Image (cartoon, rainbow, N blue to C red; front, side, top):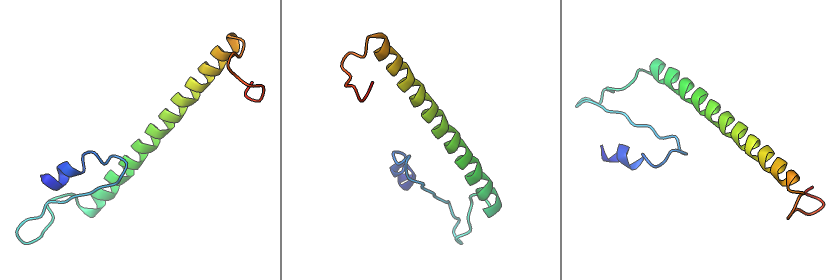
Length: 80
């Protein structure tokens, strides 16, 4: 439990763990199931990153529009 709990705050780092019995046999996922899970995780991460990118782009566009509506106050000529 402790090694797993130690990795809880490492969301930007891929971490993995496995449980084994007394003989060292894995109690976790089969290699095929692990590949499927990794593929699903990668797809989910990609969708999250695209969502964040889209949200940030919308925020930037909204801010630029508000600045323009305010007459560009506080912006230099290059930024306008």
